[in-house]
Length: 132
Image (cartoon, rainbow, N blue to C red; front, top):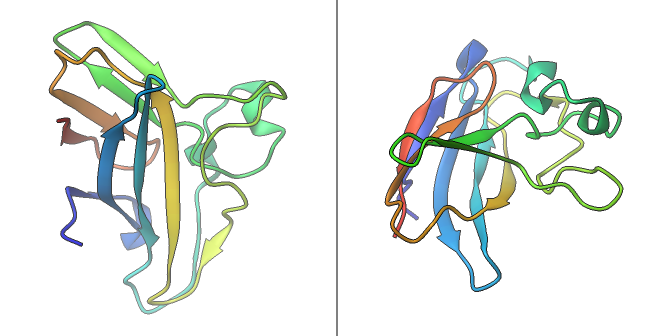
C-alpha cells in the first residue's frame, strides 16, 4: 500500500500513515506502521503517549497524538474508552533494527467539510493529512 505520508521522529523512527478513514459512527481511524529503518535498536520516546494522567497510567502508546483542523480552529485528541485507555496502539517500548509494527489511532471525525488536518505526535515532525 502506498503511504499517505511518512512522519519522521527521533533516531530515524518513522510513522508510515497508510490510511485515514472516516466511518459512519463519527470516528476517524488512522492506520499505518511504526518503523525503525536504522541499523540499531531504538527505545521509543515516552512523550509519544502525551502527558495526561489518565493516558500515562496505561503505559506507552500513541495517546499524545492530535489532529489540528486549522480552518475550523479545532484540535482533536485520541479517543479514550470508559477506563481512560487511549484508543490507539499500546505496549510500545522499543523497535529492533529494521523492524516495524502495525499501529492505529482513533479520533472524533472532523466535519465532512474538513478536507485536511495536521497530524501531530510528540517528538515527530507534523504532517498534513488529506481526508476524503
